[in-house]
Length: 298
Image (cartoon, rainbow, N blue to C red):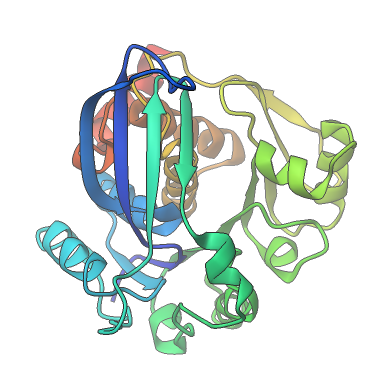
């Protein structure tokens, strides 16, 4: 049994931290540090939740000959169960590459190609994985399987957090929390004012809706309730890689522990604030003590 069930993107991430600013055309850039570590929305959330003290069962992306050894070695001494992941001996596993300089980062990968051929390179959620957990987090990227994971949560009364689920989806309607990023607003609600989108999301939600804006003001609220606002915590930024994934993890931890809406948004924001103050995040994930200290300071 695990406290939390996670379903979604689990990657091997090659990260490159640059010295002296971001890449410029036809100019040399010095690599200050580089790593190959677990990443993806779900992989990062698992790392953070384990650091906060929760036990996790993780499912989603198939793992292959390069990613599987990385994950097994990294999570060997952590409270993260990998037994539901499918190992594909004929594939290297899904990886991405991220270039970072302070507040700026650019991810690269082959996801458009992966999603274009109609094949399924992720697990089908298993009912026995969901039914014994106390909370869940579901990425929306895996078509019918993401919806199935949400349906299993509803069936077994397991509250779940999701991210970037549009207002007309099952994932959004039944989520305990839907965290919507600026990227989602751009992709799904281009031309609409953020407050208009917030009202659409609230009207169709059973749970809490949060719209994040990177370093900008957050909006949050429920159906028929007021729209509340909060600014992120002020920290010295080392790298923004994993900030949104850590925010999702913070919401999931807060859901597990029954925090109020205000407490959840503050806790998740503090988790993200701690995360962006160091690099690389997987080797230095936020601890509960660090998060509580930031909450006390601000």
